[in-house]
Image (cartoon, rainbow, N blue to C red; front, side, top):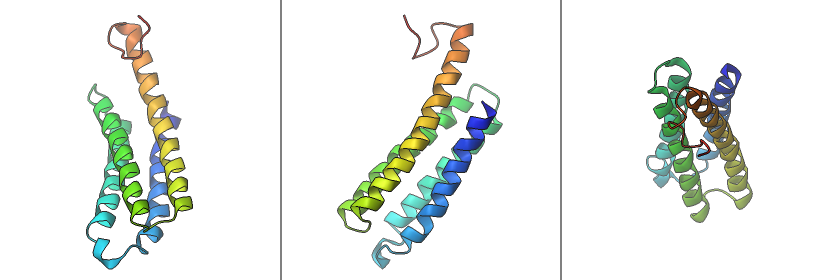
Length: 130
């Protein structure tokens, strides 16, 4: 599972590198609004993946859930940018695809964690078959 965690962090960092040039093309009025919110959401996503990787307590799943929330927020923010015509439809689709991949990694990590904990306590997993 360590490889998946590293992969998640790397994907988030590559996503950040992809976003920076894109944000330079936003209007000046959005530099400290929408652009700042997008960057902060990506920073929090990376922070949450690092915390998930390095914490070995039950709290680590909270960081993975927060990362998933940041991913969802980014989808919304890029939707706003698309509606305002700050990014093209094609670029929005590309970003959604990247975020979907990050989401699949997060979902896989959540599933693996819940499967592991359900071995010890079958009632603890929201994915357990009842």
